[in-house]
Amino acid sequence: MSGHSKWSTIKRRKGAEDAKRGKIFTRIGRELMTAAREGGADASGNPRLRIAIDKARASNMPKDTIERAINKGAGIGEDAVEFEEITYEGYGPHGIALMVDTLTDNRNRTLAEIKYAFNRNNGTMGSSGAVQWQFTQKGYIELSADGVDFDTLFMIAAEAGADDLEQGDDTISVYTARESLSVVERALSEAGYTVMDSKLIWSPTNEVELEPDQAVQVFKLIEKLEELDDVQTVSSNLKVSEEAIAAFEQAD
Image (cartoon, rainbow, N blue to C red; front, side):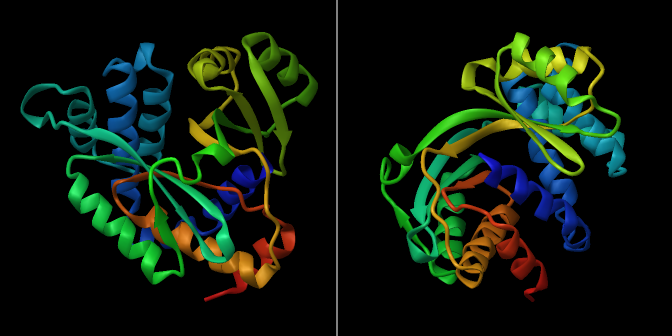
């Protein structure tokens, strides 16, 4: 499961580029809508929404923009928009399996954009069920590691129902069963830990390792997919190595 946390690290390092592309507000707006859609518009009872609001404020998103996004997701007032969640499957370069989770108000637009990204980056889309059998859906929570005692955190997370924890340089990743995500997230938040991200991901049952230059090709496709407004998460069965990360960060 380390691939997802390593890819998150890559994205943080390249975060300035996202801001330059003007994508940051759109990305956070989708997070606000998704959280409100799943857990309601009351942040006090919706930890995932509270995290998204904190991200929005840290990025200086205007208050009225935050409120509109929440209302859209929760289906409140004139801002209400009907969204649907759709998962697309496909293959990246060198046969790497990909799961693409989306939240959209126009499935035709979303499908066209995803097809274009696959086709332009040496990938192919698959039919429903083509690669899903290679994954298990898991809950993923990312915590700040600053000042955290790992053993204490491990005990609290395990008692709340977490399946696994992974120590990184700046963050700690917590993995849960799909149905336990909100319970574990709430327990960690109430225990005083800083939750940086929380979502459902597709965890591969077996990872495939590629040469660094080959892995870079997969990273580029994932990056293009994640730039699409309707895409929420992209998961793959690529085994992410430090050599591949270094090669990607040096690539244009």
